[in-house]
Length: 356
Image: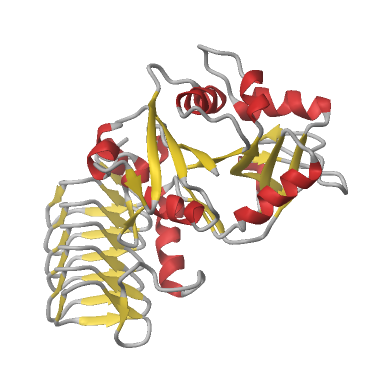
C-alpha cells in the first residue's frame, strides 16, 4: 500500500525549535518524528510513501540519501506554494502516481492505531474516504466528527464552541483515488473545511473510532508528552530502538557516561554525560548532551544541549546545542531554541527563547 505523509507545515506551534529544523525531523526519544510515523505505517504494509513537503525540504533529503526510511521507499513532492491540506494531498498523490486506495497521515501524529483495521473497515463500508477518529476530553480545539451507527460521518465541524461529540479527526485517512479529483487544482484547499464536508453531504465519508494511543506532537506540551509517554511505558516496548534497560526504568543508548543520579523513567543517549552531583528524573538526555551538576526533571535535552552546574530544567525542552548557564532556571514548559546560550541570571517560566 502507498501513503501520503503531510510534512509541509512551518511548525509554528513548536517554535523556536522549528526555526531551524522541520517539525518531523525533531527527535522523539532519540528517533525522528518522521521515522516513528513511517515505521508504524511499514508495520501495516505500507511500502512507499510520498512526503508532501513545503517548509525546509532539504533536511529530509539529506537525512535519507537512499530515499528510504524505516523500510519505506520515499518520494518527495515539494509544493511550489502552500496548498493547505487538501491541495497538498492532491499534489502529492499525483506526484507519487497513486492510482489505488491509499493512506494519508499527518506527519506530527504519533499513534498506535491499528491501521490495518482502518483499511479493512474502509473497504467493507464502500466509502470514498474513511478517517480515524479518537475521543478526547476537550474537543473544542479540533475537528469534531459525529457518526451514525454504521460509522457514516454526519457532520465535520472545525473547532466548535459546543461540540456534539467528543470524537475528533485524528489525522489518519484511507482515501480512494476519486477523492483526489474532487480537490481543485492550483489553489489552497482545506480537506477539513471543504473536501470532507462536501463528502458528508453525499454520504460518502465514513469514520472508525479507536481509543488507541494518539498524540498530535505539534505543540511544546504534546511534543514533551510524546517523549515522556514512551519513557513511562504507556506505549509498548523500549522507548527507542537499541535502547537497553539497566536499572528498572533507566534506559541508555550506546555509550553514555553516567556519574550522577538518574531516576526512572529516563533515557540517556549515546555519548551523553551526566556528571557527579547531577540529578535526572523522568527525562530524555539526548546524544552528546551534558548535565554538569544540574537538576533535570520531566524534560528533554536535545542533542548537544548543556545544563551547567546548579541550573534547573523542569518540565521544559532545551534545543540542540543550547546552553543553560550556571544557576539558571528553565521551568513550566519553557522552550530554549537551538544554539541559544542562557546566562546564569536567566529565569524562564513558560517562556520561549528566542520568542516566536
